[in-house]
Image (tube, rainbow, N blue to C red; front, side):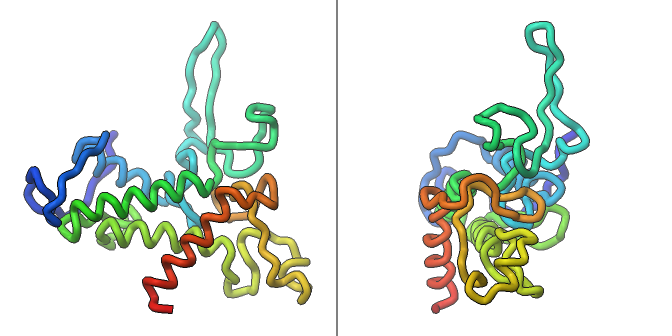
Length: 213
């Protein structure tokens, strides 16, 4: 069943609200349907970014028949539970920075076409309406919160490791984990992954410009 859509938009035209033209793979209607699922906190939108697989598959795995065998793909929010992809790597639920960065940048490109003429519900079902630039900023804010201190003095990326929370000499040490738990944000995989996870620095720089810091 298609997810209920709630959005505000101006009449379609060849040129967008900003006078630009748009060349994109999804049609306008498919793009809106995609956003409705992506921004749903019961599906792809986690407190710490966009999951690589919808959390809906936690209780409803995707099941298929292949070569006489019955296979299934389910939501695995943390470490892999199979030897696939080398055992520790898991693309079936956690938050990955390269995917999230591409999503954030793409939404800002779409905003260059639509401007404020297109506003979508974010999160889906919340009643709050945002333009696509604001949606990108919201996803970016969630990603940054992986490394920020919460109200208890804990950084989500360090999970429940008391050493990083309680030891003064460790408190401000932040590791660049390979990927992050899709529900509570704990860092997983390599802890020195300064390739794509270093994109966090670009996001911090953007947020600083937005806030005029």
